[in-house]
Amino acid sequence: MRFHSDNTATVCPELLEAIRNANVGLAAAYGDDEWTQRLDGAFCELFGTEVRAFVVSTGTAANALALATLSPPYGAIFAHEAAHIVHDECGAPEFFSGGARVTIVPGAHGKLTVDALRSALDATPPSVHTLQPAAVSLTQATELGTVYRPAELRGICDLVHERGMRVHMDGARFANAVAMLGCHPSELTWRAGIDVLSFGATKNGALADDFLYRRKRAGQLVSKSRYLGAQMLAYLDGDRWLAMARHANRMADWLAQAIGRLGGVRLPLPVQANEVFAIVPRTLDECWRARGARYLEWPGEGPGTDAVGEDERFIRLVTSFQTTEADVQALVGAADASPAA
Ligand SMILES: Cc1ncc(COP(=O)(O)O)c(C=O)c1O
Image 1 (spheres, rainbow, N blue to C red):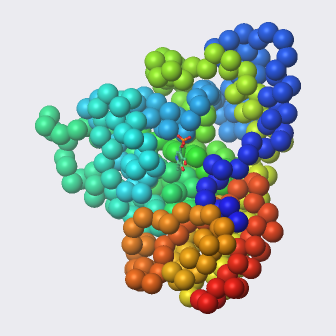
Image 2 (image 1 turned 90 degrees about the vertical axis):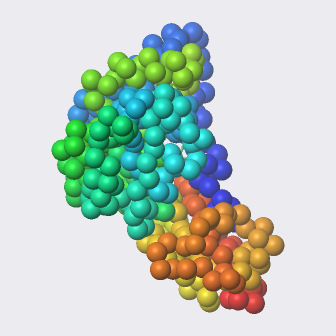
């Protein structure tokens, strides 16, 4: 009953095997090894365009370095109010950009819209006194488990480009979004107008050289890079990344359907990726926790009009490639014993 985070799952066995296979003999360091050298090609094939891929060790580093590349120190980076770069990266985008400011934009279901973004951009006409609008960061799938469709992305990217700015995508759950929509990865990235994707891959040749030095300066150029390169190749091989995401999404779907049938449980957000948000009776929350279920209580009042009552809790449950039907059944079974169910 572990639904705390997709970060808690193990490395998938095929990736571990790829690391083991790469662990033979000597290999060139700092990205010159044969595995890392094959990454650009693998990502070009995946996205159907010219791609430069840079491996870094964390999503925070990928986001912060990408945004530092897109924004000058006096720039403004616009992002949804719930974005990971706003709440969970300890100011890394501001730090690595040397002072750019992340500016929040509201939006239902964790998403930015063209109208909300236009209002935010128009609110402070640029002058010598203001931060210069430089970039917009979108999260796909969003922090609230929802997914931007290609047309929504195109609308936002068109507006951003009209204003001479650029678009970053935090693709921590990019695979879940592609799996949900069943579209080609290019439709959610460069064809829609995304300039840089945090997937461990960065597109757009003009930015790539700059990124190269920013990565080194941030201590993110890993010397024994073959172990990262080998993992990433195994992740892409045979669309393993998508198969894993499809499984996680299917489990989230089942989970949502199963707990949605329990007494007093409300699901205020559409379940489109691998995250389920639920407003549950306090008694059910206590019962689940007492029986060993693990998940997060989500800060805030609940999205939109779905206010959380005094005797309720707003929670987030996350599935991964490792979640099983038995995990879902165990959670539902634990609720059967609850007075609230
Ligand atoms: C939406 C999103 N972006 C980025 C990250 C980056 O995380 P980390 O720096 O922990 O690898 C996470 C991790 O939870 C995330 O959920």
